[in-house]
Image (cartoon, rainbow, N blue to C red; front, side, top):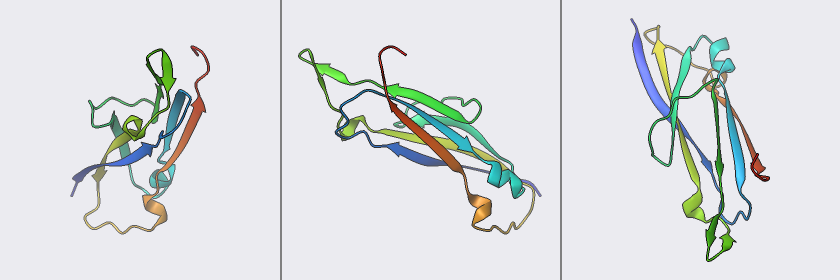
Length: 119
């Protein structure tokens, strides 16, 4: 019996009080799942409940630029945080799977750097 299971998990980039623009990159590693026989597919992502975007090579990248008010840059507030939802799909090929703690791990490597110039 095949059953399609879908869901999402969230990563929040808390930028509160940050005083520089940033570049970010999230690298999603599902190899532990694959090693345990779980063929989970990352199907897309959204930022702050916006449109669902396609994802390539299990990597999400973007930037957050400081705003200017009256000609001066202002630091980020809680309203500038990025809530990134990562959507997944899994076709379960077994009726009553048993899981171990290791079999359900998804590793996400989050890289956040100060944005320098126009790069």
